[in-house]
Length: 205
Image (tube, rainbow, N blue to C red; front, side, top):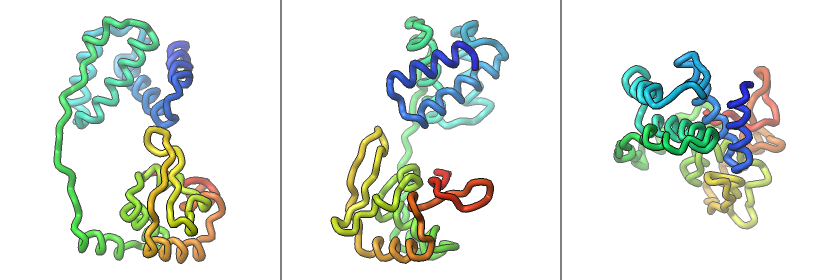
């Protein structure tokens, strides 16, 4: 690990950034330095301008994804290297606003009914009926299913906040069937390790 990379990591951690954000920022920083084959400390406005154009032109990234790259680069140059003047050279691209694709009730029903296993069915119904994010569903624990109060406890969700979500009786019935079949221990949707089912959270992808 280079000295600058360690400095960035320390700065992110002391500001209490989420682990997933830290991972994304470090990956972006590595990509940026690797694209030019030089230490980031020796790169400047022209390199950033060229790199942003590369992200749109060659990698065909969406503006929202490029905005993540910009946030990471701003953190390196402004927060870590203390080059405040660089803000003018690392602009956020204009964000494209598109209407979301909303499935009809029949389409949602067909999607759920096409599940290849009870586990997939339970995951899809949890995502749809509870409105949780995929990372939240992946980290859901058995103890988070509160059938007495009829709520799902989401721990450290977006913004690292806890929240309770109403649990419908229909979703609870499916989750109970799934629990009897899978018998998960800690994580409600366990993942795999070395190709075998393990008591670890399923990968968010």
